[in-house]
Amino acid sequence: MAKTRVVVVDDSALVRSLLAEIINRQHDMQCVGAASDPLVAREMIRELNPDVITLDVEMPRMDGLEFLSRLMRLRPMPVVMVSTLTEQGAEITLRALEMGAVDFVAKPRIGVSQGLNELAGDIVDKIRVAAAAQVRRLAAPAPAAPAATGAGAAAPARPSVPLPRLSTEKIICIGASTGGTEAIREVLVPMPADAPAIVITQHMPPGFTTSFATRLDGLCKISVAEARDGQRILPGHAYIAPGGRHLRIDRSGSNYVAVVEDTEPVNRHRPSVEVLFKSAARVIGPNAIGIMLTGMGADGASAMREMKDAGSYNYVQDEASCVVFGMPRMAIQHGAAHEVLPLNQIAPAVLARLANAPAGVRHRI
Image (cartoon, rainbow, N blue to C red; front, side, top):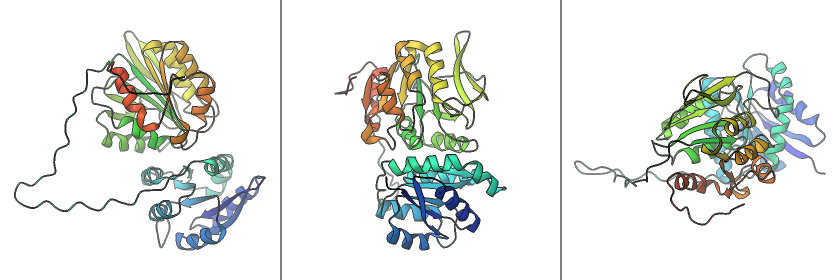
C-alpha cells in the first residue's frame, strides 16, 4: 500500500524536525518535504504533489490563513493546521476550518518538543483522517457591492419569513467531530430565536470551544455559549460541551439541566458524543431530536440507537456532504437514523418536523 505523503510547513526548524520524525515513524506515511514558509511550500507542493500538508498558522512572508485561502481556491488538498493554545490561535484556527482545513493540532507554547511527542498519536491520526477526507474548493471572494448613492440609500431588507409556532418542549442533541465546526454552523444559523434548546458535543480540545461558541453566537439568532455545570437548559439557546469535558443532560424537578464533568474519556474522547446521547435517551426520550454530523470513528453511534429506541427522532448527515463519513456511517449501521440527509437539508427538515409541516422528499431508513 502506498504511503501517505506529507509536506510539513512551519517556520520553526524544531517543529519541522519533530513533525517529520513523528510522521516518518509511521509505517503508512512519509514526510516528503519540510518548508519554512508558504512561498517555499508552494514550490514543494508543485514538485512533490503530497497527499496532506500540515500548516503552521503564524509564519513570515505570508501568513498561514492567506496561504490556505489561495491553496483551497487554486489547488484544494487536505490540510491539518498546527495552532497555538492561545485565544488568538483558536480564532485563527476556526477561520482556517471555515476555509476548508480538515482539522487542527494544538501545539503547546512552551515545552514544544515534549508536547508534540505526547501528541504524536493524535497528530498521525489526524493526518490519516485528512488523507481520506472530502476536500472542497473554496469559492473566490465575492466582489464588493457598489456603494449606495443618494440620501437615505440603504441595502434592501431581507424579507421576513413567518414560521409556524415551534414546539419548544423538544431538545435537539448534536454530535460531530472532524469537519463538524462548519457543519454545526450550517445547522444552527437557520434556527429561529424561539427554537428548542440545542445541546452540542463537538470533539475539540480545551481552549478552543470558548472561541467556537462566541463565533457561533455572533452568527445565530439563538444564543450560543459553552455549557456550565448545573445551568438550566432553555429554548432559544445552544450549549456546547467545553473542550476536554463531558456534557450530559439531567433533570432537576421539571427542568432540564446541563451536567459538565471531568470523568474518564469515552471512545477515546472527552467530550464524547456517547455521553451526551446516552443521557438524552435516558432523560429526554421522545422529546429528543438527534443529529449526527461529519466525523471519524464511531463515537455516539450506539447511544444514538438508544435514543431512537427511547422514542427520539434522528437525522444523520449523508456521505456526499460529510468531510469524513465515519460517525454518520456507524450511526446508520447501528440502525439509529430515521432520515439521512445532505447537510443543507437537515435544519429545514428539523424545523419542518417541529412545526408539524411537510419537509419534502426525504431518504427514509
